[in-house]
Image 1: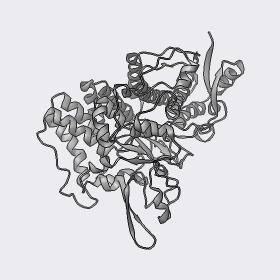
Image 2 (image 1 turned 60 degrees about the vertical axis):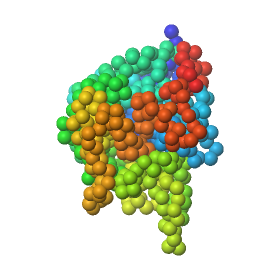
Image 3 (image 1 turned 135 degrees about the vertical axis):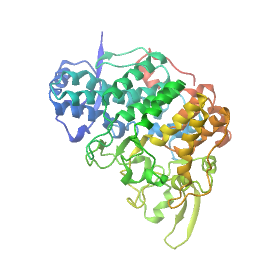
Image 4 (image 1 turned 180 degrees about the vertical axis):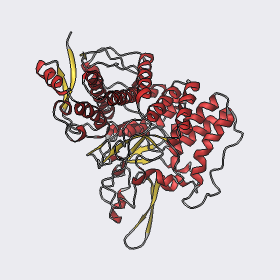
Length: 493
């Protein structure tokens, strides 16, 4: 049987700065390549570098035009293919298609998402296969394997939600044309990976020596989201509550503090992907593209460089916020202060990731991208408890998030009142809206609409004339992948 393996230059050279360099391609099995990899996995530093290389694929640029998983395409797709964002980028037909639900299997953004997820999975598979054979500190070895399994579980969770049946590649070498696994089989593997990660990952790392690495809390929080997606409310509540009861996380009092550079890796960050300066963390050379894509180009008049305004919020999203909701002022920018002293009102753009005081030029943000925040955990727990007919718990935890929205940086305003006495159905509507307001532009919205079967009903309210259909609950498998592997099934499109 012909096999192939994913060979990353990062893994067959001495440990470059946290394993950031990445030149990679699919190769048919070649004894010279096998020898190279075999010779590499010898030392404890090799094991560390191998796992760091997995993190590198979350944020860095690889060869060619393909970017890291959280660099841009993944979270943009979730925003555009929902009621959250519109495409404002010229000459970007793939993004226009996502925003209007006219995409097909030739969509280049979906192809990029598929490729980068499987590249990351393959690097994780190699690490999981090779690290057990290295003579090294046993506790560190166990932790590194836990990190690799957490990251593999995260990648498969993204893929199964987006594409449904996909190949379940778990070994260093796999057949050239693997069969697609069932959705149940993929979820079973995700659970196994996250169980393994939860069992060995630490609650935290030494200060300055672990920001960005997966923790036990990150694995447990991700597990809660997996169970929530599967509508296993009891397990979702159990996992979310375990994160809450760990006392490892808390909300910043001010919503604006969540996105300050000084808050990176802070008490609300359950798992984030870092961009920019290393400073001892698992972050790499690519600057924060999520920032320059979102800021309005009009900011150039204020001396802000490289703002693009490529993806913009729907007006309906902006209108959902109470006028004094702290999240509205932090999430959006609607005014440009010109050099002549005049103020220009503009349509809303997203600015939440911009720490203007720390990075006034706004062109090379070192901010982290939040994959899971503590507020997300609180809302997951509230949602699960509502489904379990525990209204007191559900109301308590959603109101923690709403209370924070009342704080304007100095005092609590008379806005965003606590929910009281909502029916089960009304609470479902409330928590879905709360997730929208709290987590805007963080890569959750399409998943939330699909998970709650509200894609067809809510998107047209924000995008008149755009009406998703049942087929849009999965994305089409990229045609390029099906050309290479005829065993891949196709979803409706």
